[in-house]
Every structure is written in C-alpha cells, then in structure tokens.
Length: 568
Image (cartoon, rainbow, N blue to C red; front, side, top):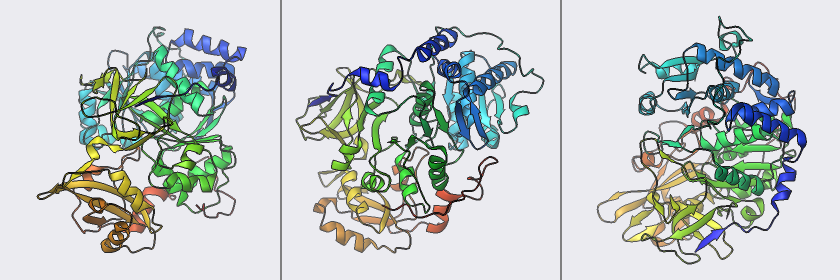
C-alpha cells in the first residue's frame, strides 16, 4: 500500500496565513534574493528590510533586532575574510545555541562558503575525523570548545566565536563599518553539510541543494502546521542538527523571533515560553519528557504549536504532554537523508499516541517487503518515500537505497486504511529471537505504561540458543525501587511470550545523543543485572538542571513567581 497527503485544503489559505501576499513582504524577499541569492543570508536580509526593529534573537546575552543582526553578520563576514576564510574550502561551525551560531551562519552565506555543522558533543577523536574527512579549512568555535580542536592540522584556521566579548567577535584591527571584501555570486545557493546523528559511530556528512522541489516540501510543512509570520519560537533543539536548523531558518523566513539558550534546562525553557509569550516551542521528545518532570509554574497558554521531531514520541508521552499543556503537539517524522515525511497533529495523537502521521503534500509513502513488493494495509514492512527532499548523498560518495524513485528510510512501519503511517522501529533494531520477529517499540510502550518507570529501551543481544535474546534497560521513576522479576511479571500479562524480556537491566539513565536518540549500541553492551554506578539524583541533576551554572545569564532575571509542578 502507498499513501499521499489528501489535498483537502487550498494552498491560498496557507499563503494568506504566512502573509506572503503582503507587498512589503514580497518586496523584501525579492531584495534579499537579488542581493544574496538563494541563501540563508537572503532570508535574514529580507527580515531586516521588512521588520528592522523586530527582535531576531533572544539568548543568554539579551536580544538583538534584525537590523542589528544584519550589520553584525556583515562585520563578522568581513572579519572572517580578514582571517583568511573564503569559499575555497568548507567551514565548520562548532557552536551551541546562541547568536554567535546564527551570525556565523549568515556571515558564511554572505561569503559564499560551504558550511559544515559540527556537533559540540562529539568526542575529540570523532570531531577530528569529521574535520579531516570533509576537508574543512576553517572552524568557528565557541571558546570553551577550542580544546576539542587542539589536534587539527595546522593549516586549519580556528576562529573563536565569542559574542559575549563583542570587541573580540568584531575582530580587533578591523573597522566596525568595513564593508564586505566582495559580494558572493547571487546564483550560488547554500550547499551545507549536515551530519547524521552518529548513533553507531562517527557521523556521516549529508548534502542537499535547495531547489524548487525543496521549496514545495517546506510549503508542505507550513501547510500541515499552523506557523504564522512573526511567531516567537523557543528553540532548545540543537541548531547543528537538521531539525533545529530547519526551525531556525523557518523562523527567519517568517521574520519571527527565536529564543536560544546555550544549554537545555527544562525550567528555564518553561520560563522562556511564558516570559516571551512564545507561539511555538520546537523540541526533541526527551525535552518534553524532562519538562513534564520539572517542578514549577508553567503558563503555556500562549503556545499554539509544540513541534517535536528528531526521534519518536515514546510510550504515552504525547498523551501526558497534551493533558498538561493542551492540544498543541505536532510530531514530525523524517530523517536527515529523506527530509520531512509526515506530521501527526494533536487530533491524530489523541486518538493514537503511537501514530507517526499523514504524509505531507508532495510526499508519497509506501510499505514494501524485502523484495520491494508493495504490502497491503496493516502489514509491517520497509518504509520507502518519494519526495523532492531527498538528499544528494553522503559526502563519502555513498547514498541510501532507492526503489523505483522511493528512498529507503531504514525504518519499519505500516499504513492503515486512512493512509496514516505508524513506524514500529528501525529495521536494524528488529530482534529475531528463536525465529520470531520482535519489534522493540511494542515492548517499550508496555514497560513505559507503568507509573513507576521513567524511561526504557529494548535491544537484542547475541544468544547462542535463540540467535538473539530480548534485553530491556529500564530507568525507575524518582524514589522507586524496581526489580527485574517485578517488571517481568507485569509484562507477562501484556505481551506475547516471546516478547517478554529474558534480561532486564535497571540503570539511572539511558545514553542519548544531542538530538535525544538512544544510543542502542551502548545498551547492548550493558552487563546483565548491573546497576549504573551513578546515582539517580546526580544523573538527573547533570542532565537537566545545572541551574547554578547553565541557566543564569547576564540578562535573565530570576523568576519572581511562585512555582508549581507541571502535572500530567
């Protein structure tokens, strides 16, 4: 079976909501495109013309307007060129979520340089591998990340990104008003390298060139989720990742305001929503989970949209979040390689928290067998997708498998009679035990249904008799003591016999990458019956709070309101 988005609404409604017919908007977009071509710089230039005094960024250092951002990014471009950065070799950005990331990104677009977005959380060895593999000639890095680059080749230019030290970031010895040394070719489009999540090793580089087709795909997202011009977005999702980056650029294209923090803190994120009257909150699922667990008063009444992507919504998280924050949750499914595929809106998630959603306009999804044959309604198989958002390939020359123009996502799923997609897991995560095909997501949802479980993941490990056995790794809720026998006894009444985990490991937290994806290869290496050496309290503090060191900023005053628990 295959499914497309039903064209049941007029695109004019979306165009009007986005203000695209406003003459000032149209004029500014045209000027931006003529000046900078089809690049990131064009979107920011257009916003600076149409809404020069609107806040572009709110971060740990305060706020700056679109006009200020336009001037600052031009000075940064001139400074980078003065340091020897040019379009001949790719340039890496190794920055957390703050204005310096945005200014660097816009400045490099103005120079016509190809950007490689680097993960600040990568181990130094993997980071150096990526720098060498991608042929990076310069890296703009946060000052506290410079040690990560100590082993790069001496030919690589390293520039410290320190927007908190404005005189340094404006490049000493260079006139504040010095114009750009040259204008880029307006016909050159952005051609960035976005890294995959790297859950099984060093992340791979991917490329995708903008096209008329990709613009149509972006319109599909805007049609499915009710973004509006001028929205205020709180964006804790990492900017170096495809999901966070797309939300940053979408906000700029709509001349909105983005609220950024160097590090995610659930209480501060909730404060940011209220303090800024945010319309949109863009997150990865693990952030929703941690915000639900955070104590405090959370007035989320301004939110129209909570957009989640990067990984699946686990267990009943969608139900609990909407019970606490209202029916505003939209779950987007896609990948760095394939692009955005589908959206589950609040009504879909209320009916079935496990649903992945309906394909976007211009996207067709098929479920196929191992031999490529199309499967029937309800049958589980490989999820393959046809759209205009397919990536150009990995930077090492490899690509994903394509079947009759449909790209393989690497996921397994099924389509129902209404054309709604449900992804049941990664194809390489499926466990084959004693000849039975076992999908970890089914077991994870059963485990997470219990109130005494905070988090869980299921993996397959080698077994001499069964081929693989099922291992569940479980994180207890605060103040709860769990036993393997107790969990297993409950699951016997809810799962098929072959799905009940033979091995249950109780730990203090699951290993995740910056986009919230579980590092399952690490879980397969946990010893049976062992408990993590870290205590739950210290693990939770390091993962979420860190209020004494990360949530304070020179421009953020402590909240004056009393706090209550966000309940589900």
